[in-house]
Amino acid sequence: MAEVATVARPYAEALFDVCRDDLPAAQRWLKALADVAADPQLLQFVVNPKVDATQVQELIAGALDEALPERGANFLRTLIENKRLAALPEIERQFRTLVGRAHDVTEAVVHTPFVLSDAELADLQPALEKRFGRKLVLTQQQDASLIGGVKVVAGDEVLDTSIKARLDQMKVALTA
Image (cartoon, rainbow, N blue to C red; front, side, top):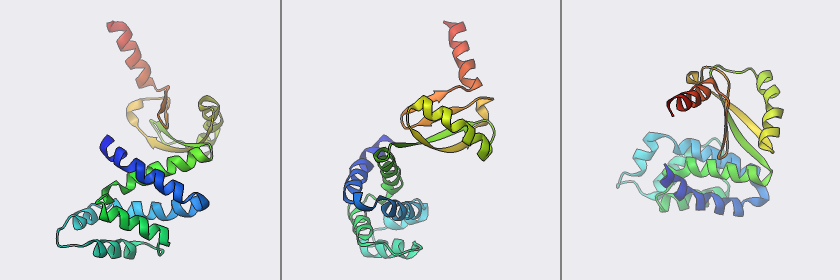
């Protein structure tokens, strides 16, 4: 997985630098491209030696709801020519992270053993923002193995107050 992240980073950074004047629009078309590129059948089509870059570009452009702006079409062409289409979802993720940093916002995933309501998630947000020291955009993911509590992943920081983590800590302490 680190290989894909390593390949994606220069593309995400270059796109971020080029699109600074209109980041929201770039985020929209890049997200649309990443969603299409995540399709395993498309990736199989792309590696077919009988298929050329123009056919791939036309297929992807046809699958989008909106026409790509010139920057988007050029970016897509570059990825296809360099055989980096499979990295597009990771490029989009890293681009989103760069945009968040530029606006001092971090995406955070809240892992809970059960789904929180929107109100509960909103109540949790101020405490998490204070703990991480920045504005967070929260999404949640259910993980029944946590038993109770929450685990929050914000960038490369993790706050784990789950019962599972506490039991693991207790196990280490008792076996040491």
